[in-house]
Length: 266
Image 1 (cartoon, rainbow, N blue to C red):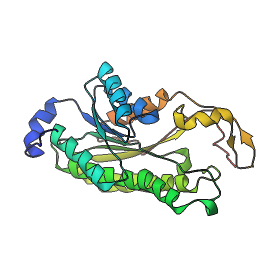
Image 2: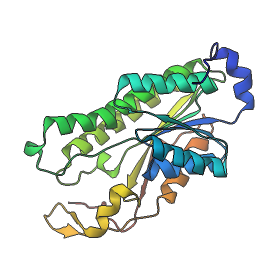
Image 3: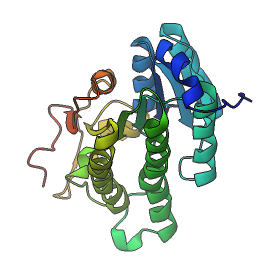
Image 4: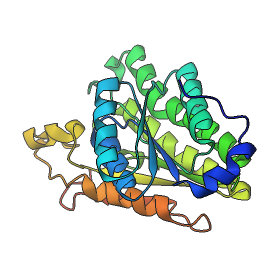
């Protein structure tokens, strides 16, 4: 167990000499894994959060191979006490947080909305929305107190933050809500040098998009194979957003496979 620091201010001189600290949720696979490794290669010290400890350790090894050592902290972002423990570990170990990438997310079974079990709806809300809020709340508290003050929060939205797929009411509703969380955080964080932006991703090659090669339902009822893109393009975009000085921000960025049916969907 990491020893607890005396205070955020007591660690300020040391923090100024250390590499910047970035926290990635949902870091065990997919976009989170790719972003974590890219941030490590860019020189960030990584804190990796996710539910699967073994996968987090594997990603931590990947990060350490290209950059500073990474710290894996098994976490369920949908559980407030688990998020409390995560941020206490960040505070005690590093004394500051420079970048939070709210990436953890899940989907529900694709069924007509009247058939969606309430438990499935709640599980998606807990991770996609409440989890992002809890992590943001803790990050804002720390970023306000630390010296130098401020930091950056990047939220993983989705093209579904603007345009839904069929039978995706829980995922779509939470991703629309992430846009509101992003805007509110950017506004409320502005006086404290806290910048917040959102990256909206379309069909990056991850385990979540493997079904695209088999064909997915379209709004007209047909099934269509959709193109995908290398997830490293998303990782590079996250590194770019993270590396901006705090007097500059990307409020929204869309990174998508060129040929996917998004523009004009429906």
